[in-house]
Image (cartoon, rainbow, N blue to C red; front, side, top):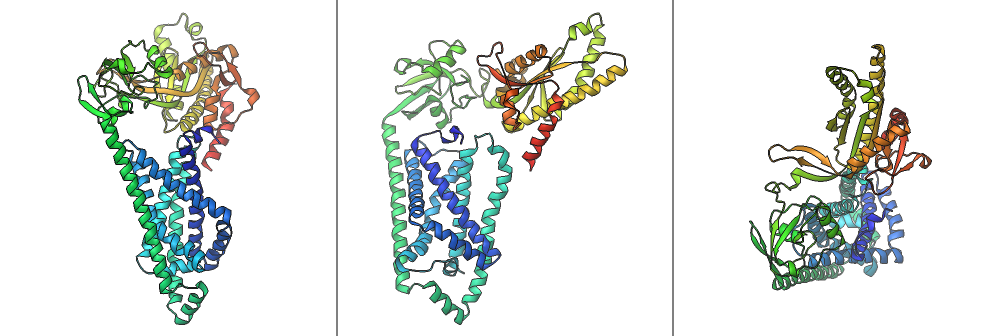
Length: 563
């Protein structure tokens, strides 16, 4: 398991583990209900098997511990929030989570409690008769959907940053849609069948005896237990609200005033970073890296209150040193004002240094291809400039379509070479597009060289460097005359890899980082380490004599991805 999946404090890890336990329980429970679509025996057969597992003392303790732990941590996280402003997906998950107990408590009381205390046979038929045909069946159906959507959002939020998750999401969406509708179809099918049986007096008596149907007094007691359970939930929710409000009032008494030069003055809670203060109060503030302390676009000049700020940490100090910042300059994502502070935003989303917003710069992990023609100077010595331009244009006409066909864009032409980037929704798709483009370029070059040979001209050789890394895609240039381009270490790595192909006499050097993202498996012995000029760490890469030879492996990987 990737260590990144488990980053965070113990409460985060506990919430993930407890959520997974509940998600697995819900999944098999819904599949069980769906079997009613086919035959009653299938439904009850799986239920008997599930109960043999879930009603075991160890599994029961695990399930209810996960249930109360997950709910308790959720309420705790709400109480500890500094603001209720949150992304829509997070807000939806919170709301759905708070709706679950309203129906789940009744469900548990009428099944597990009734079974353990009053020896009720809580088979699926008993539950369905209990609900059918009242509004209860629709309330429980809503519970099913709420639980499932809540769980799917949580699973997605946990796994969305892994490399493999984007590849499987399209298939899992189908599963996510299928499961609840399969369960609802089974519920309705079994409900109609068993209610028709229950309408027959003779069969009704058999059902009542088989299920050890509770008496009116027993039902009244169960309803009272349900009401007490709901009361406890409302008290817990009320306590959560009181803690949240109390913490907010306490923080307001311990607030700080921030004055933005050429901007508003706001009062915010102590403990937040300046960037968080800007975001909470709707103050435009650039932060291309999302507040990680890497891009420095959130930097401010502290005009007043700098003495009350602690000195920069390692991350902030390195970033400020990289841009040669003055001593009064700080990163808004790193400082937490505790005294009245006046700051000037160096970059603002409404203009240029003034132009620092996400629409003009976005950090992405993309594939970069650097291509260069070999021995171009020797080949063109003595030729007329027109002939040189004509050859270059013919060459680019031959190879560039292989790039654009895969969604790539030529960022710039550099004499006899080019730099291309593959903007795709995720790193894996970008890596696969870059690899396929390199293979197609090799094929296109073969065809172009055949044409040159027929004309009596020598063939052309090329070198390509292909790498996947972090880039900033944005507009570079004077206001009104800026063009979109890419900046980042990945560009330098791709360029240096291309330079190495000349000495190695290979057509392509592709980094191991890109191969992994593309899902292309190659023998580890074929990977070599390259100490590239201007790159601090050695780069593992695969030398490929002819890029077209990778086609078989790439096609196999693409078929496996599509299967």
